[in-house]
Image (cartoon, rainbow, N blue to C red; front, side, top):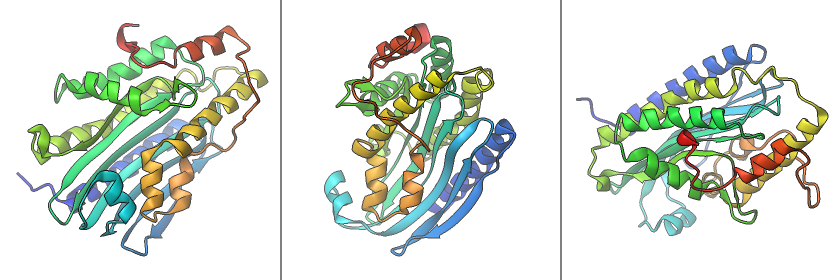
Length: 300
């Protein structure tokens, strides 16, 4: 069996970025990705790819990075680690749609290691609909459960609960969306080999396109009104609040002197904050009522 090295992992992530970008361009049918290569002064760099003004995607990014060097003190303190050099690589995706009926989607798959032998994988996929549609939520979670079950029947319930807790906008007392799965620091302490953990992460990465296609394919041409668009901007505002206040990935990127433009590509092109806005339609009210932890979407 071929050794799972950081070089091999980074190369596979590059290929994942390529395949996802190709599939998204085909699904959008209008716009293509623009690539921006960058280097980090302390070590490493990445490829940022952004798509905008498409038929499906108003703004989106599919980013690859592989950064290295002395571990910043903020990271050591946050992760309770001793000083050693680090290497981190991964792919991060956020897509903001044109149509308010189409959900926002996010995925991140990543690997982290240190020169003292510490290593782990992390990642997950989650969906943030502006309007929650139960059948779509069920199908999205089915994709994730199906992938998780191939590796461990305990993964989906564990990682779904983790996502509910992680993607929670505490100051709003609501989840960011309908969740998905989230996992972090998957190393050898779980009794699974590095190869096993790596195969799981690869399968999660390859689940992204099938899950996204099913989430959007019959919604991207659905008629919408200006009221729908205004609601989309308000929900985007909540997305921004989570990413800037709570998201650990944003903090990690900034604390490791990553490329700011790439880190903040997750933010939408437009967002609104209306004072004390109250839902105006049954669809909006039902969506807010669905932004709770612990919903069994597959059996809802």
